[in-house]
Amino acid sequence: MPTDELDARARHLLRTLIARHIEDGEPVGSQTLARHAGLDVSPATIRNILADLEDSGLLTAPHTSAGRVPTAQGYRVFVDSMLQLRPLPEGEVSRLRDGLPAGGGTQSLLGSASELVSAMTHFMGVVSVPKREQFAFRYIDFVAVDSQRVMAILVFADNEVQNRLIQVRRAYDASELERVANYLNVHFAGRSVADIRATLLREMRVARDEMESLLARTVELAEQALAPDDTEDMVVAGQTRLIGVQDLSDLDRLRDLFDAFSRKREILQLFERTVKAPGVRIFIGEETGLAPLEGVSLVTAPYAADGRVLGVLGVIGPTRMAYDRIIPVVQATADVLGAALEQGPPRTG
Image 1 (tube, one colour):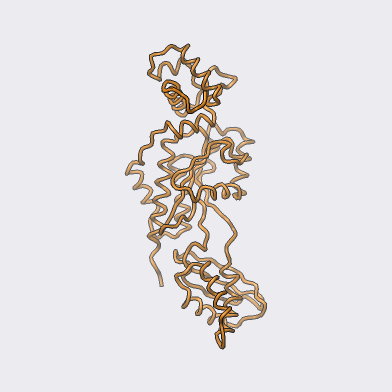
Image 2 (tube, rainbow, N blue to C red):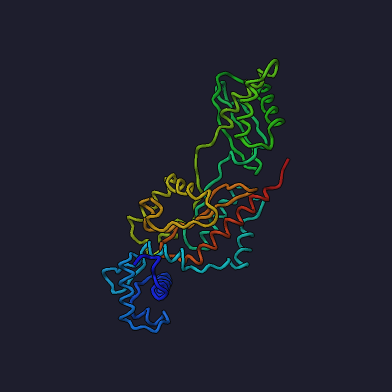
């Protein structure tokens, strides 16, 4: 029975079975369904329908029980066509706004967002960190460390600060570093790092007379100081909450899952697949394409500020999760986080 040919009775039974299983975690038998489905059919008829649903790959019967539980494919049908979502209650949205106030700084907001979404869902919260080149450059300063190294201190428009150590071909004195910093601050404040690099190289090609030497020094320092930051990262909260989840009690599975969290790279690549997709994306079990995540579900939503998607926020938990509850929490948290980042921190100095 293809899933698009399920009749109304089969869909109703599948929805009821999954709702019961999500609530209590136990396999659901025909007698239980007969009591809760509200259909005027016999347990024998229900057993026949459940057998058809099992043949379709939507249900499976654990060998220790006569009842059935949904498969990943069953959850997919449930999420795609049977789920009734309601907006997050205003009281919980207010809780998010209180926990994600504008002006707290990007890193602080990301940490708070991951903690909040974890606390509200009782699962693991994950937020990918925006790439620094997406933010406008505000101010730079250079400090000589020794004859071969210079420290670049970058301040971005969101008031986040990065220190980058630059290897130089010759020693720079304090006055040279000050001239380069002043040139960058006067001409490029408010522009993105990628735009600054492209403009400097273009200007270098057409530079003449006394500006040429200053531009040459500026390009040498800026090439490294404003290079793309390839250290991908994410903020994680609530890993230990997964330890107490009944469906994730297998220690080997948890170990593989935590190893994947520590490596981050694979999960970040998965997030990259969702960053340009509007709204909530749901990966159930093996849909992630990552072996350690085959026993879990990942619910994600992109967060954006000023019309630009900056990253992805998500929740990782068991496939047996209350999707009707988790999805609105993830969407609302991403929206509130984006709004807080858009308002930005107060300018200082």
